[in-house]
Length: 93
Image (cartoon, rainbow, N blue to C red; front, side):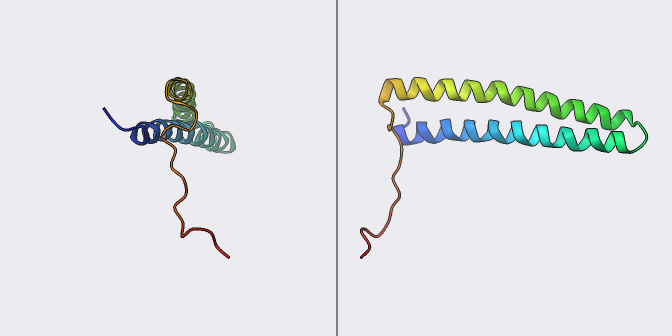
C-alpha cells in the first residue's frame, strides 16, 4: 500500500494531466479551427481541430474523475492527509 503522500501525489498528477488536456486541447482546437478558416477550407485542419476537441472533452471527464477520487480520499483520510508542508530554514528574523 502506498503512503498517504504517494497517494496524494498520484491524485494531483491525474488532476494536472487532465487540466493540461482540457486547456491544451481547447487551445489547439481554436488554433487549428482559426487556421482552417483563414486559409481556404482544409479538411485535414478541420479533422485535427475536431480531434483536439475530443481530447479536451475526454480530459474534462478525467478531471471530474480525479476530483471525485480526491474527495473520496479526503473523506476517508482527512482533508490534509498526504499534503506536504514547505521545507524551510525555520523562522526568519
